[in-house]
Length: 353
Ligand code: NAI
Ligand code: MG
Image (cartoon, rainbow, N blue to C red; front, side, top):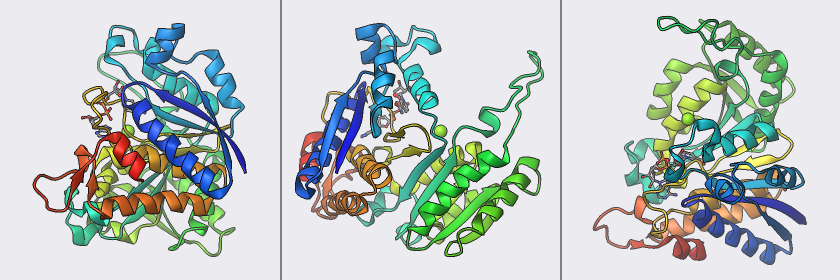
């Protein structure tokens, strides 16, 4: 299979981790007889330096002609004097909006080898494997009117969802759940208080009728925040709206133990956008300390969600597991004086995987 992938490496550790992700993809392509074509494009601070804008038109045009976009990270302190709309981060917001993805997937997986890195006890996290599906283009963050008048003592945000917006993200979640082992969806809302949540619950329930193999449960968001920390193994796919998904998926990052381990994918737009959850980490850029695993697991998501290559995605995930089980660590996931651990630089970890 031929796959054309836009490579938006960006700033700081973005290029360092993206390079390792691309090497892993190429290894998989060579082993399985696929051809992956990479289109390197500028975004963020590097684009400002070259073209004076964080999202040059050429970057967007060429990305729109690719099968998937793999992004590293954007952000560079040397542009802190610029207004937000001109900074590197504006390039990311613009490309997300232009691509139009509405289903943000964030896996939260407990790695046995890293059990001691999580603040949660190993007997609680052991085996936890949650896939968050967060609605990304609706709800409070996009509701109009955003502020009905400017005042120092009153502010106003509007939560809006339409049936179509809920239905399209629910279908993606049910499709994903139907291909997973547990085949379970936990839809999270606040239906005891919010009208939007009552619509959400009704539409998700309607969609569930088309997926008889998937079990659906509803949870209220406040108690869900506790369940995720006390019994994360009971969940499989967690489907929720924009604000709740933002909070709960960050909360569940503790299950994995390091920001450098977390991948994400945004589906449903013109081109799917894949990015590790972390930023450009200027504090460690250029030191070889960046953990490439979040980016490498993001590459696995490219293969799973933009190419239907489940076996190839699993190959990458198994290689990550194996590297960790053998005691290999980057600095962020290393623990002092533990026997049998080797601390590796970014490129060494990438090569090993
Ligand atoms: P950050 O995620 O870049 O770093 C937070 C902390 O985690 C730092 O101590 C960093 O060293 C560490 N870290 C992050 N990724 C790591 C990795 N792969 N391996 C090892 N350690 C890692 O967030 P921060 O510091 O708040 O922001 C830095 C810059 O990144 C800012 O300009 C910010 O706007 C930008 N940013 C960009 C994002 C993106 O491109 N998607 C997301 C978040 C922040
Ligand atoms: Mg957030």
